[in-house]
Image (cartoon, rainbow, N blue to C red; front, side):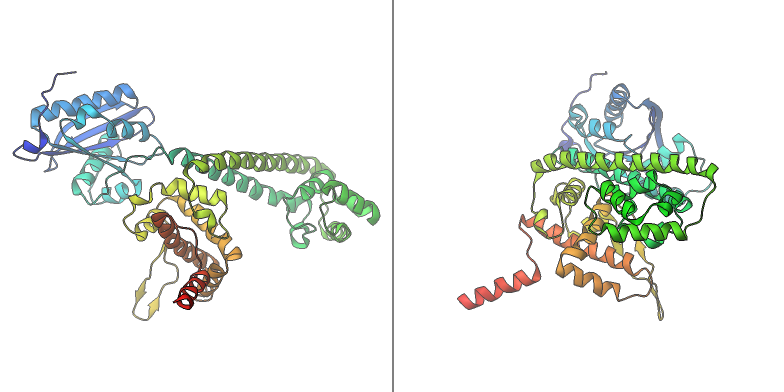
Length: 433
């Protein structure tokens, strides 16, 4: 590396800022550097590894010497996790930060895509994309990326992995339902058990066919249900009677079709059981990790450890958000108004932002509308306000209300207090006075 004479930035007479756009990929990153007028000064590719990162650093150091650069503003898209290592390297690079200021921006790809549309006749190539990113950074109005908080990062990775496993579980369940209809077409209509995915349901569906259920005496069928459920079904006789009705009302499939159906159902149920067991195991690890960053969110009736951990991992240090609306925007929880004349649109939900934080907030809100009287009433009020998307809109707005509570609790490090508790506390103070 070329020796570079360190200089005091504050004593530099004129400020010189260069803008760096980095188009990221698994193996190779493309870099474009422009000046304050948008003139391209350098364009090159680097490997997406430590050697490539050091090469980029040396290039920037050379520009400090050649152009008397005082500030580098560096932008990269939040593409998968390909930005992670390079971002961390530049954020903690002491040699570069000793001779100039370094501002880093991890930008939403949608923002770059929309910005690119303002250019005419641009090709979709790595150099072009890197140039557009550099221009977007030069355009400004971006929030500088904060340092990644190592305290919350392990929890974030665990809760995101749980989210991934839950998605796989839902996918397997959705895959199974059409095949369940093929074997037992009346099952979902009659619901012999509370859920088609309970252990008892799985055992009956994968082990028995329509003919067997139809021929089996009711007493023997009750014994089967009891054995499959290990006594957990409250009313095995009712379940057996409904199973008989399912057998009577369902279409009969040909013998040649039974084996393929049973194979699909059995294996899909095994996949469902696998994901359910894995999620339980992950929850134990999450609970252990959550203890390191324990906060007051679990004091909210309806929010358990998993939801609290998911929210905490994504929010991180609450000090990163000047106002609660910044946190809501980060989560993508907004339902803005669109009005023209006498028309007011009801479909105005903006679904952007951090999908993981939004997921855990909405799931927590769904739990609160059941277990928390204050939020139950709020949800119902919002549910009754519109005629379409009633549940979806009410749930999003309930999650938005929850953001205000979470922000205040994390900011002030206080326990949950409902409106009723607050009124009781206020009346107690008055009576004492």
